[in-house]
Length: 299
Image 1 (spheres, rainbow, N blue to C red):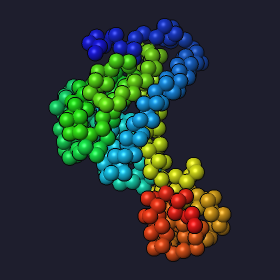
Image 2 (cartoon, rainbow, N blue to C red; image 1 turned 30 degrees about the vertical axis):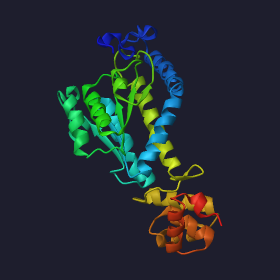
Image 3 (tube, rainbow, N blue to C red; image 1 turned 180 degrees about the vertical axis):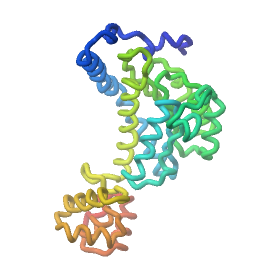
Image 4 (cartoon, rainbow, N blue to C red; image 1 turned 90 degrees about the vertical axis):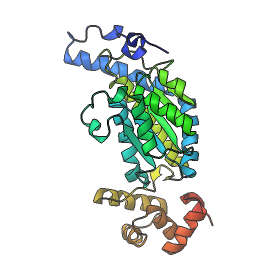
């Protein structure tokens, strides 16, 4: 455990940006871009742990559990952002991937004083969700020492849920409270201590991987197409029609007509066209295939 905040890698002074205040605009941008290039390589080093986490998330959701993100400040907002994108992208309920931020929804747009320093609040927020052993909890903290996250992970362990700590410092305090530790060592920020920069980018990349890879493993993709997209507007309807056409080779009118007959369900539309069957049979096929389109259309 690191007690002195200035000993944290994310809080150290970056020797490559010491003159950023006197640099030209072009030089400032180059410095920041040079630092950003380091993020993907840092994430690459933790991929084996991310793989473990994805497999746990798939098991959780397959068993009726949830993926729950929790964090404070920027880290909490990134978790909420990833969670709210899952329903439209993958047609999962908003209760399947959940984002918690210290201080509640109002903290998304304005800091709530003292919320992140309250371990008990992290535990009570999870308790309010009726946390179960089937759930996976991902605690997010760039520094790796946020009390809200520590309290939440400690409570999750007591319940028996899968616990994951995502931080940007080695030897992070939250790692001590989790079964799986993802420590993305991005090094000091271009602007000292501003962890919304490289650390935030690293967290976003990892969260993208956790949710997207998990959903792909749960049958939410065919090839690299989003076959479980939720059609909530015209743009997404056009995307759905394009997906159906790409996979089945049918024409525009047939794709749109079938989509309507399938109650705007892209997966069912694909099966109906590929097998020449009705909606009910397509749904039966998908159910028997655990939602995997590729398996459902095999004769």
